[in-house]
Picture 1 (cartoon, rainbow over the protein chains, first blue to last red):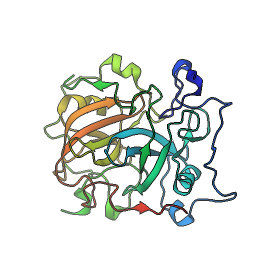
Picture 2: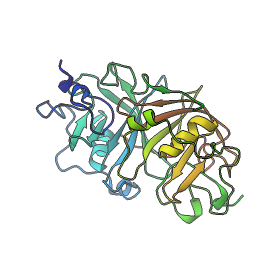
Picture 3: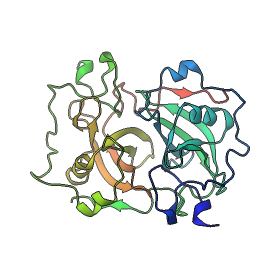
Picture 4: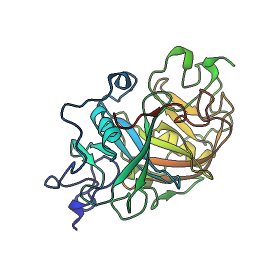
Length: 151
Length: 151
């Protein structure tokens, strides 16, 4: 597997040799397509607060251990797919397309529960993570870079 | 305590009767001021990726139980204060000022560790949360609104 066929956590503009998201030619949405024409429940959509780009952050947490695995971004459709397909689905800011976690890497996130926060601007998705959440091979995207305190 | 003297989790534009952040007249930064002129380590600043507004998301997690408490927003200075004062400090998007969690509510977050994610655009702050993280009185900002799956 080349670095362009891995997937990972957050948006941004990663360097080519550690691409955070699937390559353009990679299969997407396999087995996790929503019903045609399906849209997010309007009552829920009315409660969401989105950034200027229409996105809101989604925290993925391993449902049983409590590990914070990664943070991704969703729009209404990504949230709808996450709620209805059982597979955690993000919006890739760098590639400007939907990204079903694990479609290229096999490191699927099976959705256990989804909660909206008190202000309606962040979701917490509890998942069962297959393998590594991070494109580096680490279990979580926060394993490698602990910052020094006190300076 | 009135609703305008509570504090809470995320930015956005909360309704007046459930303000998510401290009121303008509330004491701020008490006991958690950085050294005058202190700035974030330039080597760390060079690794951060920020949104168009200069901010990046910060996930607060209870260090021992693993609970995801809330998501706030930081800029370089907020991260610097969080790393150096021992108190989790955010940037309030609604009030456009620094916000030391717990200064008005007493619901302080004592910083245990801070990690940057693989893409440099999100931080995970492990804290010891005093009392409720959420301005509603809930322990976390994700307790009250679990979304139905499958639709």
